[in-house]
Image (cartoon, rainbow, N blue to C red; front, side, top):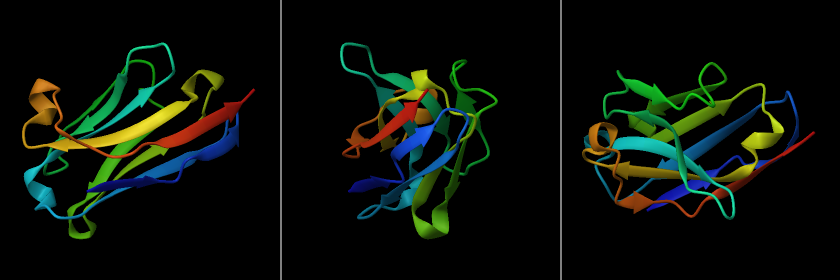
Length: 119
């Protein structure tokens, strides 16, 4: 089970940190990723991190502003979002999978948390 938290309403230029707590699995056997989706648009993979935390990937749209990290001792993956823009408004989902970092496919998903950036 994956449970996201930390979403909310923030002004443009502000920051939020999303958390995703995992239970029921050996967390450090899984790559993790953060995705976002706006109604009517395709889901976007904004960041990925491998199981050790040693490798990360960012979409061009968020590179330099977002940071993905994980704490395997706490079974949690984070997404620090800085300098938020109106276009970052979306429902954000975390996902895990044993091979998700390399193939981009994730089988286990959280329920999502809304991030709204006011301009």
